[in-house]
Image (cartoon, helix red, strand yellow):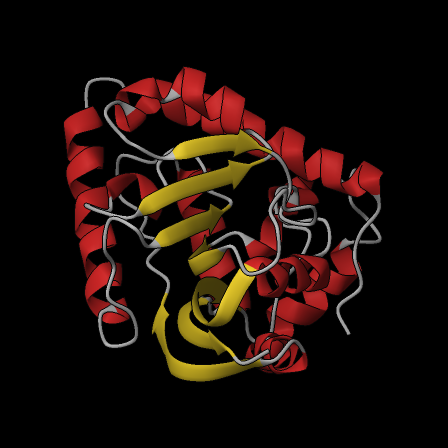
Amino acid sequence: MIRGISEKRWLIAQQYQHSYQQQKSLRIHGYENNIILGRYIRAMRVSNLLSSFLTITDSTRILEVGSGPHGIGFFLNTGDRYGIDSLADFYHHKFSSLQVGSKVKTICGKGEQLPFRAETFNLIICDNVLDHTMNPELVIKEIQYVLKKNGILFLAVDIHCWLGYVISLIHEHLIGRWIIFKWFGSHPFYFRYKDILQLLNRYGFRIAYKDSKPLSNKSNKAQSVFRRLKIGLWKFLFHTSCSQIVCINLK
């Protein structure tokens, strides 16, 4: 069982996320079209992957949990789409140029308390979100509740090696004390692959597809020496990979 974190720890993570996205909104100014193109490509790839399990039409009800400033749902070509995020209002203001024209109905809320009835959605997307939540187990439980029987969950989550996992556990007892550890701030959780598979099985999901690829985290000469050293150390300690999992709700 994956234990949740305190409200205080989650608020720290939210503050880090808010600060990161605030800086990001400034960095991408003038490059919005490049971001939009990249997100359309990402959405197309996910849609193509899901086509083996679900035909998405205008009436397909889709929820993205943790829709962020430019989630997959904003760039799908069809579907009755909803997005929920604890920072949804902030994102709508800061990243309006990326969301303009989208038919996604955004809601400010948490994955641990989805404001929908049982068996509402045909497809739920949770893309690089679970390690930012307050209680990953409760999020999966809520997803299972609002997803129709035989509905599809697309889950993308970062997976870490044993060393990174141990370091992250130690870190959670040090958060806020040593400034060097604050790069962990926005991620309360670091998962092993078996943790995710066990969690999905526990809530009645059948794994229909899974893959894992090294997470791209490139450094370049334009970055500061400290930034490049930080990225190199992160790669050495964590060996992060991104796992994409397609699940079928059997309950």
